Image (cartoon, rainbow, N blue to C red; front, side):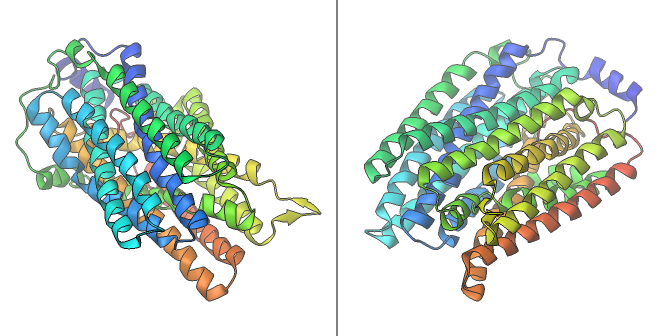
Length: 454
């Protein structure tokens, strides 16, 4: 889209009065709350199931993949908030379901050793609630952000909220890691329940009253939409650049998610870390992600998107750096000591997180532009479509990594060699993603419009 077209759309379609920076930060607190609760399921409970209870890594991976599969309903939640003209009830309701699902997931985990069948069934219910809660709250929140923020603030606003989400994960991981040792089931229940309830209360307080300042509240561009999920998907995929970029997003997000469920088990099995130590290591990774995002934001090109080459360099730096860091983990898997000393696992994980952050800002910014394209007053549906696409990659990534480790451990009879194979494969995917990203940006005549979050 040309600059003149962007200016014309800003004059005609964009709201004259948008959300201020304080409102944006408050919405970021909601994202932080979502991240804090999700961390319990995808990181802490995953570690407990695999290491403390000696369950197959495929079990928590399957549960996390299922919660991503439930998020395929995101377009429905987004469409519902579009038609209802008020998104706040969807956000609060989704957060309530998410928090309750997190608490139920903890109880299901504790039940697993005594009653595997009932514990698994309860865990499926819990992760279904987590997926539905993330879908309803997250999609509606991002749709409100897209419709309520003036165009020139959309990209930095999305970066702020994403960074704050990572910050929520880091704080929750650090808090849980500090309080959960020495490990006990009672301590796990108390700490996890406290995190979930605190996050819910914070989200409710943060979002209160923001939507009233939107004019009109949820749909500044027109009437509520009646189009279906299929129509929204066809609208996005009709654009050739969007189709090519979708392939890049899927491959890169697949690689991005593969280490999520195996990093803490890797730390416990190869480096003999305690639950608290491995949880802190996960927090260190997410801290690196946040630092990478901040650096990319200060750099400005990921926000400005003036030329395709601007985005290309951040994609290269993020994907290439991630591949190198994963190569380091692959070496560490079979060589935990180096020159008589321990492998610098903490520094390695921090570098991985930093490179992931650089990549995430550029990839998310590009998805934001695609979500902002097309007909107006359908922000919720478009956010839902892109959220569902990302969820597929995340779900498959986590499941592929965990199942791959299980299979490799059986075939190779070595924990280190199994993790080495998966980390090396993940590094290869990041290299492929870098090549795809460069090709997309080089073949794009106009810069991708960094306008609305995915």
